[in-house]
Length: 220
Image (tube, rainbow, N blue to C red; front, side):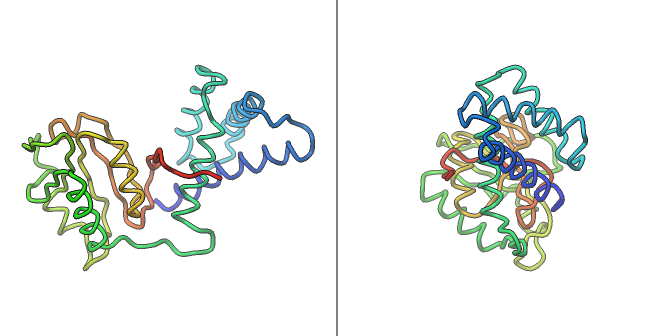
């Protein structure tokens, strides 16, 4: 799974570096419409030349379709900047991947509860059919009680965990990212926990798909 996070960061960094090189050489105008057109062409060329590993092909195809359907409104420059920034923060070049600890998840759960979220960790939620959790508030986070044991080797997360969310998904993504967790969306709404969306947290934050990009991410 580390291959994906390496490759998606390489895609974003390469696209931005090549755009900036075009600007520096005077071959392209640094303007939103011109930049977006550059990225649409860049993505198409990357697909045709099979420049990157297959693990990021779905992302490239999705961006190509978005560029064709939305044109100048596709915002590909911002997408690449956000990916480059987020993955650069979580995986600094030359450093080993940081492990995720049980204590860090517990601290995050406590913070969510303090901010008014209802949190459940007492019920089996994965591999047991459709489950319904009864909560009073609009926002809830549920973790499978079995996974709270089986996904860890000592205190270290060694298997992917499924986190189920109802309510303000954008706030959840921001809070989780700020707490040091990259969350990878499975579904917005229809999961095996009724009325909840589903996200996966991978060991070392190294997933096999693009992590959710928080709205509050600061970009230089």
